[in-house]
Length: 69
Image (tube, rainbow, N blue to C red):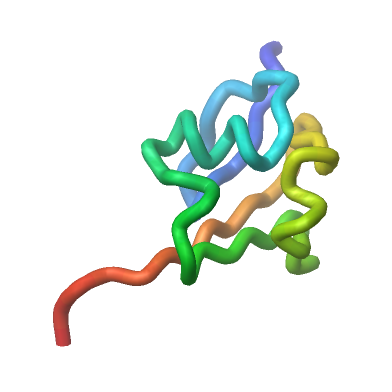
């Protein structure tokens, strides 16, 4: 069985990456203002994204601004 992660409720294959690379793989610019990341319920400070590894079975929430009302 392959290791997985869950990103915003969707299960994906796990890859050994950090938060910055995960955001890039999700099509997000890590430098964009307003983006927040939580892993297993704990917010990861932006200055720690490059050093925070994504582990198998992590539950990740990515919050980003969106247009609409």
